[in-house]
Length: 91
Image (cartoon, rainbow, N blue to C red):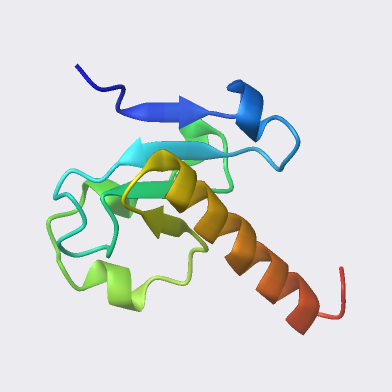
């Protein structure tokens, strides 16, 4: 069985902010990615990831990465965080 989540305890996540990667329960149908990466510890994940509302992903202000693999989701998250950081003046 494929692992369904990663946390920043995994070696390739250690150098970044606290990160949790989870398998999307609808395989990306609503979120846009089969895997989702959040810049939070696993206990701080947004509650809407368990929501059945397909439009929640369009309305959310949470920053998250998405992809067809955990590595793609993580790369997308890093890219999005870097874009936000640049927009905010390099904080």
